[in-house]
Length: 132
Image (cartoon, rainbow, N blue to C red; front, top):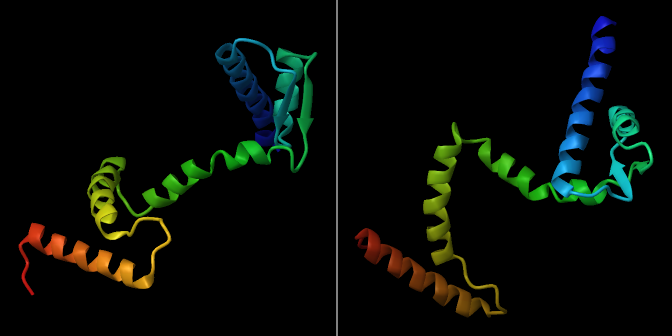
């Protein structure tokens, strides 16, 4: 019970700090604000900018949430690695190798894709020095 009382003002304070930072970064006040249904955003908005329209509805925030999808994909990729440096090291090598093996995104026949992969394998064997 006590933790609920303490968390509301803290959440409102954090939301207020976020809104102030966003206003400073933006430079001018927006016509309306769209957020999720977290009530602390409404309380902070009433303190910081009471004259601005605030929308908080289930589907209105989808545009903002969908812009975070690339970040979420990176987070999902990071799960198997111990550190961001380890992930970066793997991705820097893997992307170069992947570009060699993946066929171009043009409409190609199965035979052309097969030839591309054979050429890529031959080039890979020449670089690594493996013979079959």
